[in-house]
Image 1: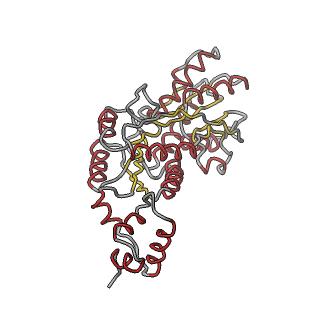
Image 2 (image 1 turned 120 degrees about the vertical axis):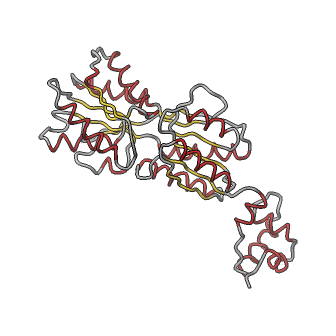
Image 3 (image 1 turned 90 degrees about the horizontal axis):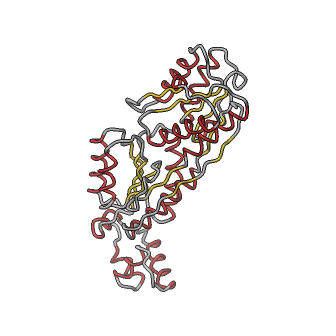
Length: 336
């Protein structure tokens, strides 16, 4: 028969409530008392039932990271950072592949709430009316939005990189290099990539380029499994079939850029001599592909750490809100 909390209390010579307070890391416990309880737990090989605790306290000591596609390396890296911070606070993190449909996303959130999830970090992808519903839900359960520039609201917590500034910086770099025709490859329904496109177009004007809509290629995602690569490849094909071909291509993500590079290499173009290419995110493989990819490195460690820290503050008091717009760093590699 397995030991229980009463056995621990008896062996340690304390009350059941004292054992419970030690398990829950409550304050104002004498170090000597805590040591006795922990020694008794170890001797009895006692492991607290967090499921039972969650029923009693309505707290599961669990967070959820909601992402649109687990195959995206950026989200995998973000998860690792958030999980590490959460572990330091005694929490676990569930990685949830919620896809893109309203019904699936809301169904995930409903199931998580039924399981007493303590808080949610939601990676925003598509720009849709669903955000209005999610913001309302965030008033009921602690939630932090990642990759969503705050639209001047003080009732939500958002973390994003400054895509407007970042792509403007890339265009200015190409201008300084003497590039004549700078193209953009993006995904038309993605919030952050739309901001990156706005930075691209504004910087073209600021640098004196005449805007050419034929140098802009954007597609809408229909599903997520590897579709970035197909879109990037089609984009390069369309752009390089023009009479006036681009000599630089700004891509909204690294995965798009890697596919663009593949098309260029397969069709005899030299990178960066004929066409320079940049990505965005600095995912782990961007330095390992050929040629190595120049890219905007999102401050992913800062992003993940801040998201977790803000969420823990909201778990204590859900009226707490804080939004951050973070600066990225351009990493120059062989593709430029």
